[in-house]
Image (cartoon, rainbow, N blue to C red; front, side):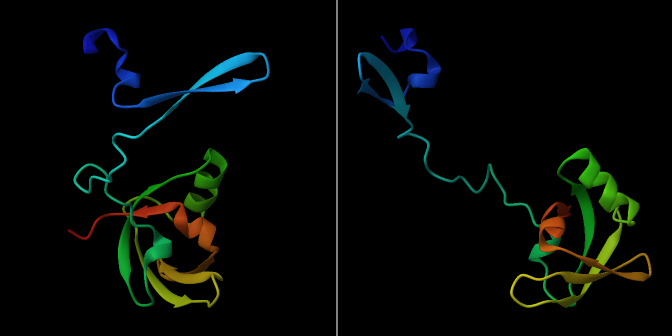
Length: 118
């Protein structure tokens, strides 16, 4: 019996919701709601560092133009960066990269993923 049910619907409850004259079937995922730390590891970004911390850039995520903009400033994979100063209330952060200071918005810093320290 279970073999005939598509895999996408196994372990899920199906609900029928009446919408006027038509009926729509929706599913709610009740299984697999747990977070498995061995499968998904949170990514550390430049915005997660504290003042004085150093790290190496792993990747830059985002649109192609946003990636190009950050790489033109010297933020390329393999480059070591150090946080010099953090502004309060979610303001920009100053970093030291390739011998010069650079100020980045928090949104830009969140797009820069760092290598794991482990």
